[in-house]
Length: 134
Image 1 (tube, helix red, strand yellow):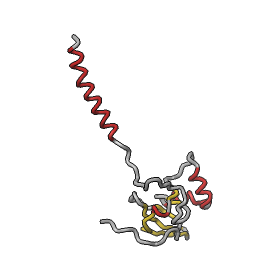
Image 2: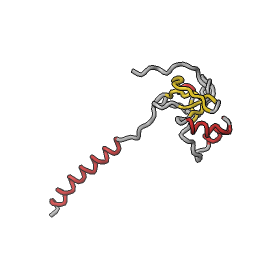
Image 3: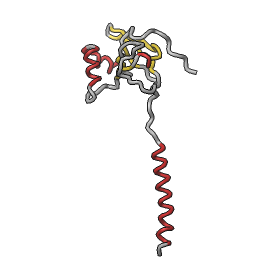
Image 4: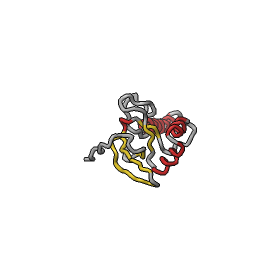
């Protein structure tokens, strides 16, 4: 009688171990970042971080009370950041779009590791064109 349960347990054990190996092999997608870089830390080469948002409406809402209030809001881990973040100037690839809304101008800058541009204050980064996609 002991051979029958062992014959049943071997295929089950193999199936469970293969499933576990597949789960462990899967990793959540991550945005590419330079090793040891902290996006919220000031960049010595380019100045302080730049606040940017993928949505212009969210950028306007975040910046309503000024840059200092926006930076304090982003520093609070419990606050809703509206998809916005403080990025190092070296993360930007160049200005890809511009808009004027309500008499205020905004630039949308390309960000390394993503296809969405981030809305920022005009003149924050140099107006170098984003590299052409091949």
